[in-house]
Length: 337
Ligand code: COA
Image 1 (cartoon, protein in one colour):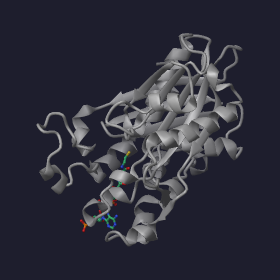
Image 2 (image 1 turned 90 degrees about the vertical axis):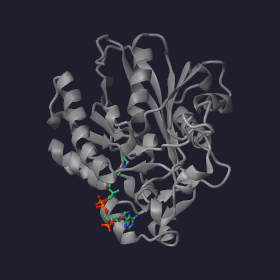
Image 3 (image 1 turned 120 degrees about the horizontal axis):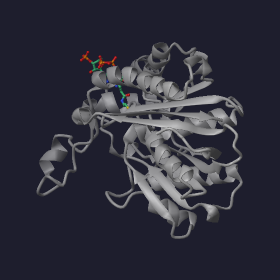
């Protein structure tokens, strides 16, 4: 999906929000048979943020959105589309897009929910990018948010998953760049292989079961997310570099042209393997999983916002985004900042 027209999608503002409660590895040691050392060595995570009771994904999404809107310095009434990415909506249906719209007090604009898990931000960016480049929309709010902590198995049975994930949200305001300059999203590249559904999924609840909610499923822990950690690890290390290479090739660019690589923060070892696979210096890789854990769709916009606000990403820089997750799905995007 390469931008053929002169109009490109530019990021006019970024923002992120995480709930205030910090959960350290030591806190998790009290809940299950794990250790700070194991979690640090295997994932690079030191702490993550968890919401308190009553706080949902849409609440985090709205805070991140407000910050991105303030950063862009725009009147929210001028937003003409919301694209929201999450695997953890407040409700089974509807999605969080409409809740973000209502909580921000926006008019009856469209609100699309994208469900592509850890690849959700780049998938959602590809959707927003099409609307902007086609001229259909002039200002899109893209928000990615997750509350993982309320449905993780914090017993020994779920320790491989529950130590990795955290809650948080990131948002960007997207606009057309019609000045003919080179700034903006160069292209987005989406991939999927549905043969790997059970390798990373939340199996239940499923409307295929009658009734959908059965006590036996609870007892067997089938309402918790599950993964085959090794399969995910191996595929993530292979697919993210492939996606970045495809994006560079489509734009006639080389790995040396990339100033910043923002991989989905799944596991710091995966991020380092992706850097190694691409032969990109580790200093160019944005890594913040130590403080947030894996926040699924939110991880890339959180990392992007931090890097921009720290002055690390500067005008003219080439930013490569890449993600891998449940589905399996994977993706890459290039942005000329
Ligand atoms: N604390 C302590 N021990 C744990 C543990 C925890 N939280 N979770 C698992 N273990 C144990 C395992 O039971 C296993 O024990 P065994 O050898 O007695 O069977 C041992 O640690 C090693 O497990 P292994 O699977 O070999 O570890 P690993 O080095 O592959 O790391 C993951 C495990 C989950 C960290 C790693 O596979 C991974 O990061 N996978 C990808 C995860 C991911 O990114 N998911 C989301 C993608 S978007």
